[in-house]
Image (tube, rainbow, N blue to C red; front, side):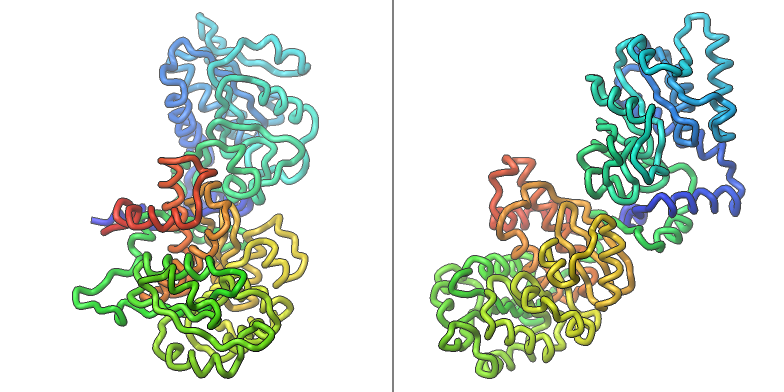
Length: 531
């Protein structure tokens, strides 16, 4: 039976949304902040125990701020001390300057330290950075300095503490988010802790997944601290927040063939792609559409290219499109060839390898104005739309998936600041009434209703030519089988990234080529996504 929890997407929150979730839980539901802090600190301590292996006799240094993040660190210190650890708690502020809940937990530590005859719990009020060098070498360092509230560059002495911590050789556990990392963008604010592992409270934070977050956070654990699911879902609707798909969710969305299916009922995918200069792109896109399950894949390419593709695509139908003397696609003659197929197809992909010939670009724009099919626009299809945002607004109508990388997106939207990628993707997906799949590591999907998704799979092996063509082919193959553009974009990214992850688990990431994804795709569909 499907696990209903894992089949739900994971919320990814901004700092503001997380504060609102805390507020609603404390004020509206009556769950005290002290209880949330205790649960958070104990959850962080469980992760610390796993990192240490054995707590008894091990040395832990906790660097704690004056806010609730520091309070979580105080709880963790108390738990590890109770399990026999030698715990040193370093603070910068007097207890009178701490938040109420943090101060209450610090006073508990003061009582324990005073009553501990073995002196395994020591509290250090740091007034001089030179005192750091008098701390014993630790088996684990805990960063509980600032949490998610940072929005400006680190100032002294926090900056010096971060630099000191990064010079230690023992593992570092960051609570909620590494100090110095912007929790909404993943940008480093002057300096940031490089954590071995990060334990984050209630839900993932955007900055853990974007920008420098993946490099600085290490492995991530999400601790459930008592915030109800419906509260997280409500605050996740705020701008800048997003979702992450799980394997179980994608498994539920992926199409399944009926027992009496035939090639046309399984979905006809029409791909308009290729040029004399770029013959590989249509091959990769067409093979991906077939591998993900489209029952019939037809590749329409310039007539001069058809003989070349015929030697590479034995299981994909081909039609040639008439060309002008200048080497572009003849507009009306091409429609004479395509019209019947456009009526029969269930999804359309336009762009991979088509080139930038002016005649071809005019043909692309007219094709997009005429078709009512669910359509993926990739590569040179996107280049044909540069400066044509009004055409997108008028004709996308929620049916189009645009798949730009950063450069292509800027050609479409202008010189936008992508520091806040989630909000930008949300803004343009809504303004253009399309599904916007902004490629990167990780890729981000925006739906026309403003919902955003951060892809949860994939690795640097994908940084190779042709993977975008494979992704576009996966999208059109899924839409040909009846998936909506919104679900197709999320599923194609997730499954394609999972195939890359499988490759990386067997081979070096730098060795992967785009077609290797298709070799691993059938296995990953069986291993991770078969119901």
